[in-house]
Image: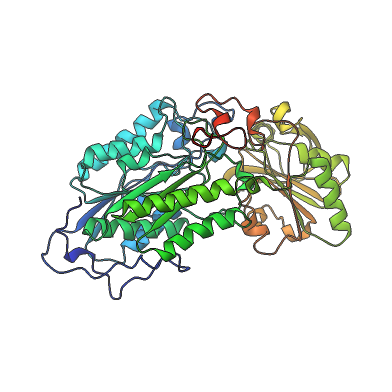
Length: 530
C-alpha cells in the first residue's frame, strides 16, 4: 500500500533503536534499510487538535476565542514541541536521518480545559481550514501524524477525530499512512480507522506515557512509510461506560486490563494493543470503552487479540465499579480523626467538581471546625473581578461568598471571612487570590478550574504545603502523581457529592441525546450481549 522508494532515508543515527522503554514491546526496533536510491527526504506532516469535552458543563459553546486564549495557535516548528505526545514523536523522529517534519497550524488547547462544553461547528471548520491549507501547501507528504485526544465534541459533527482523519485522507490520498495517538479517555469506534492506519492509546492514568506513545507512533509510522510494516487493524466496543474517577490504572482490574494488553504486545511480534476507557461527559455516539489492535498484515491475529481483550474486559465489568467514595461529611470527619492519629497530611480529592466551583467539602470543613487545611482551589472569577475593582491588597480583610454557582451541583456559595494573604499572578493565571481563614486554613481562588496534580503547584503566594495537615484538590486520579505515588499523603479519600449531576458517578442522572445509556453496562446490556 505504501511507497517503498525512500530506502536511504530512515537509517538510524548510529545504533538501532530499542523499544520505547519498560520493555513494553520488543518489536519497535527499526531495522537497517537497504540503500537503493538517494531520494529526497521523507516529509511528515504533524498536527495537534485535542480537547476533552464536557458537553454537559455550563458556560456555553467553545469558540475560536476560547481555543486561542491560552496562546495563539502554534505554527511551523512550534507545533513539533507542543504537548507530550508531539514531543515524544518529534524526539524519536529526530534520531533518524532523512526525515523532514512539517508542523501544521495547531491550537494549544481550550481555556478551561475539560470543564468546557461543545466546540461550535464554525470553530472546528476554521481550525481545520488552516490545517488543511498548510497540508495542501506542504504536499507531497509521505506520512501524517495526528496528536488527538479522542473525547472532543463538536456541534453537528458526531465523530470529530474521525472527521479530522477523513479530511486529511482526502488531501493525501489512499497511499500515505496516517498515525494517531489518543488519550486513555478517548471515545472512539471503528470509524476512525476507516481513514487512518495506526492508532495508539496511552496505557496509564495518571498519564505518564504520552511521550512514550508519541515515540511508538513515530517508529511505527516510519516502518509503514518504509514498507516493512503494513498496518492491519481490529476495533471492538466492550459496551461498558465508567466514570473517570474509577479508571485509575494503579488498581485492579484496570491495571490487569492494561497488563493483558502489554502481554499481547510482548508475546506477538509487531503487535500494538490499545484500550481507551472513554469519557462519559461527552454526549457522543461512540461513548464508552474501546479496543484498537494493530498488527503487521495479520487480520486473523488482530481479530483474535481484539476478541480476547473485549471478552476480558466484559468479565471484569463488575470489579470496574468497586471504588470507595465518601460523602463530604464522612470524609471530613475521617480526615479529622486521621490527623488526630498522626496520619497526616490527608488528601481529600473532590472528584466530581468538573466546573471548579464546588463548595461541598469547604462547607463541611467550616461546619466541623477543621483546621490547617490548604484548599486548592475554588474557581470564582467574580470574586477575582471584585477584588480587582476594589484594588485589593494583601492584608485586606476578606468577607465574601465564594463558589457555588449552581446550588444543585456545586453546593451553596461559601461565606469566607478572613484575610487576603496574596493577590497576583499564579498557577498560570494573571490573577489568583489566597485567603487565610479559620484556624490556619488557606483557600486559593482561581478564575477557572485548576486541577492540582503536584504538591509544587501549591507553592504559590508564600504557601508551603508542608505546613498543612490536609489538602483539598479538584481531581479524580491525576493528583495521585504528586500525592499518592510519591508517598506524600498518609491518607487519601475520594470525596463524593450529594445528588446526581455532571461529574458524579451517577451517569444515569444525565440526559444523553446521542447515546442510549441502556446499551452500556452498568445501565443496561449491550445489544451484542443480549
